[in-house]
Length: 142
Image (tube, rainbow, N blue to C red; front, side):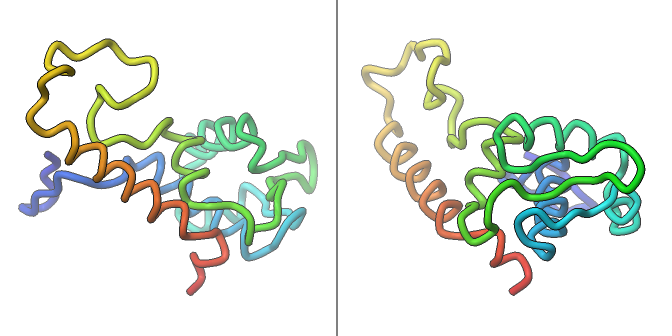
């Protein structure tokens, strides 16, 4: 669980993911191919140190493209109406799952054959993925 200012939260996005969502929401306002400079992103509260890391993940996932040099910045590689929140989260954080044993390629859990909450965790993971898939980048402004 996370403790923030006296409040507890057991489920939330990591800071890198929150910044990533901020980044793509700025890009979504410009539409596919619309360039947003690093300076503008910083003015909107995105630290440069996170920008580089996030951009690398989003470029690898083919969600954004970079234009280097003077007048450079980042732009969406796809129409924002076709990019889901799930794609953004997975590009930055990897596969969305409620438990580590549900991530493809993870070590086999010793309780796998008789786990008391496996069915519930599978359902919960499916529902979270369904919700994240429902929201598009164009929903950020609404």
